[in-house]
Every structure is written in C-alpha cells, then in structure tokens.
Image (cartoon, rainbow, N blue to C red; front, side, top):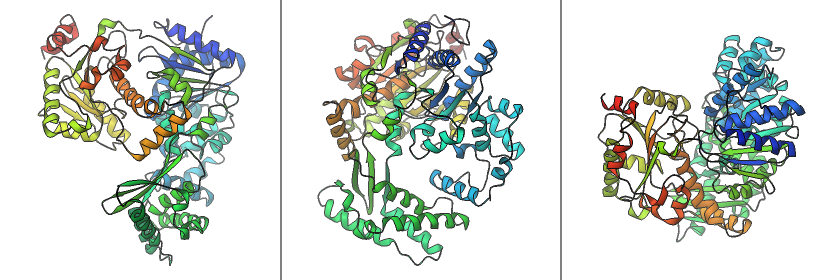
Length: 609
C-alpha cells in the first residue's frame, strides 16, 4: 500500500511505524508511539493520518506543546501536498495573543490579555477585529496561512487584519489544523475554539507530539496560587481607581491562618473551608468586582498586569470541589502563599476520550505502560521502535566523579563539576551542550567557568531571545551551551547538521521534596496501585534526562559524545532508564573520547581551526 510520505523512501523502522499507525486508525483505536529522535515521528504520523483521512473524510489535529515545534509540521504538509497533489487545506494556529497585532494589549500578561481582548471586541474598540468582520479570506490568504503562523501574521499585519480571526475563518474549511495543546486541553478555551472553527473532536484524528508533556500541562491548567503580596498589590490597584473597597483583610486572614497552621513548619495542607469566612460568604461578588475593576484598571492605562485579575482567577479555582486538588499554605519570609495544586488532571484526561482516535508520540514514553495508565488509554496499541541510526555514531559514558545530590551540593562540588566539563570538552572538537537540573545549579557551576565561548540560557527567556541564542550557537565552531533539562533548549529544538558534537547531562532533575510532591505521590499511589513514587518523582526526572541526551543525533550522519555526569547514573534504578544509551555503566574515559573522532573528516577540519 502506498502512503502519503513526502520522502522517496522511509527511514529504517519508519515504514513499520506508518503501517502500525494506519492499522490502529482503521481499527478506531488509540496508539502510543515510543520512538527515538531521528526516526521521523512527525512524518510517520502525518503519512498514516493523511492516507486514512483521505479515505474516510476525517479531520486531523496536529498538536504540540511549544510553538517552535510547528515549523516541521508545516514543512511536511507543504511538501506532501506538492508531491501527491493532494489539495489538502491546512492552517497553523497559535494562541490568540501570539497572533495579536493590537499594540495596546498584545504585551499584557496572558490573564490580562484575554480579558482586555474580550472587552475590546464587545465594545467595538479593536479596529483590526472590526476590519475582519466582513472580510472573507481569498486564495492568497489561504496560501499565506499554509506557510506558517509567522508569515501569516505579517500578511495580516500588512492588511490591518486580526490574524487570529482570519486564521479561524480559514480553519473552518481546513482538513488539517496545526495547533497548541492549550487549544484542546485547556477546559477554559476548548469549547469556544472548536465552535469557532466549526470542527469536532469526534470526527478527528488527534496527533499529540511530545505527548509526555500532557499530564504536566493538564495539571497546570487546573492549578494556581496567590500571596499576601499579590493581595496588597490588588488593594493598591483598587485605591488608584478610587474604589472604596478595602481587601487587605484577605492578607490579614492569610497571616492568621499561617499562624495556626505553620507553628512548626514552613508549609501545611489546608482545606477549602480554611478560606476566611468573609471571603467565602461573598466570593461571587468579590470575583465580579475584581474582574470589573481589572478592566477599568487596564483601560485607565494604569498598568497591563493587574494583580486584581490574578486574585480573581485564583478565587474561581478555589471553589472547585475536586479530590485531585491539594491546597497548601507556605511561608517565605514575611510573605504567605496559598496554592491550589492539581495532582492529576482527571477532567482533562476525559477530553482524550472524545476524538475518533489519538496518536500519542514521544521519544521518552519510557516505560510506555506508565503513559498508557496516566493517559487513561487502556486497550490502546503500544509500540516501541529502535533508533534508525548506527550505534557506532554515539559514544556514551557515565562520569561518577561528581553529583548534584542535594546533600552533596557545595562550592567545592560545583567547582569540581566545572572542571570536569572543561576537561571533557577538550576531547570534543566542536560545540558541546551542557544541560543542568535547574538554573540554580547552572548558575553555581557557571561562576567557575572561564571560557569566552560560553552561550548561556537565562530564566524566563522569550522565544525571540531563544532564537537569537541558537543563531549564536549556529555561528560558533567550538562553543559551550549551558541550558536546563526540561527547558526550551533541551526539548523540541532540532540541532541540525551535527551542530552539537557532545552533550553533558549534569545531575538528575528530580523535583525538590515538598508537600505538593508528597500529595501527588500519595494520590498516584492510590490511583495506580502503589506506583506513585515512580510516576510522580523518578520517571518524570529521567524523561527530561533522555530528552536532553537525544538533542545531538538528528540524522544518520551525526556523531556525538554523551556524558551522564553524576554518580547516581551507576545506580540500578536510574541506569535502567539509560541502558539503551550507556551499556554496563561505562565510565567516562578521556582516551576513548579522543579516539572516537579519529576517523571523522569534518572533525579533523574543526581541530585545525
């Protein structure tokens, strides 16, 4: 059978993957695909889905957790369309704020943006939206939409049109919709989005890229927090508006609650009825007041990030009755924080049962049975695939001379880690990426690095800043990139043309012990027969490790050194998850690292630079 694959020939194992996905779709079954980087998961899923969709008149949603991952999907669809003359219509959807050209509101916080946008549309005050009402996108705009959201944004900007509204109009007639997880997973936006584009999940195949992220993102949609500082800022905003209402009593009551609950500790569980009575009795009225005042605050140009709106959204979550929610009070200095932490997104997992079929893909579905459990996919087809690349192209080691284990952290240990990085880098001609368990550890090691070729990821970098950082790396020949596991640089980024010759994984990104973590482990223990510690703590950390380790090898010609730098990688529990990369706990050997590059022509050229 011929599948719609853009390449002349499928990669090793890719053909089997296409067949397996297609057969699952024919059976109307969900499928989980665990396949290493480089096998071509995106093209395999699209090839099988497009073939099935053409035969059965069904839609396709291709969902990613990050905007940066849309590009490869757009490229694949363009080339497949051209090769087979399919006439497939598709659109690249991103969040409304990312497509907003209204300079008055597009740089607000996410919470404030959606509130301000809704108000502006209702009052007819957004000229871009007004220009769009009677505008019917012609073939030229449909074509622009097929080149990705960035070019489409420019096209709409030049015409003075709301890019989001035009994109949703084009989506109505599209066969394939590339979108973010939030469009479907977020319970606050899903219904409105599907209604607006006139599509349903029941008549769609949904492809979930990097699907190991679904649970964490689902939890984040149901979680939130406030602090006494937020309450004070919200009250200050009310004063600036001349409102007579004083809400500092909320902060006062939070402090009283902390005095009762935190006598001998820094954090404690609280219940839904621990919210101050004065707040509970008038919570609907308080939410209404804060929402209205937030809009007035934004309109008055007093600020674009109202704390009032943050407080309002928190109160809306507080009243949710759900046994998968943990409410925790914490004291940090004089600041009191109350959080709502979703331990398992049960309501969001229910959404996954709506599509005709789901295709879940990841390079880190390990163990795949865990994800089948967590995603509620009992009865789904589970498939594991081997790497298509020659094993000789990777030399992997464990460096057991150091550790980032919490009780072992010290200035001496950080200096030792820096020295080990420098020493290992000497044997690797070309760029090396070093991924850390946290920004705290990154910064602590960075102070001992004396290298002008360091390129360093900072906290809270915007997409445009990450792009600039990657351009700097692309122009380098012998740089060291510092990033964090689970961040923008260790997941979803394609380091093409063997841009990275080595990867050093420093430590294990285990979550810091906390009441939230304890509650999550206990909840998952109860739900999944005693597997809470693995499901909530150990395996999520190792998934970040494997994701980061896979960044260097992107095609059959790439070669790389991988070093797992922490003595814990020799422990059975952690080594079992990297055993396909490092056999028999092989310890780092500088001589072997040097010998690995002897016959590599490109590397010899680099050594002469």
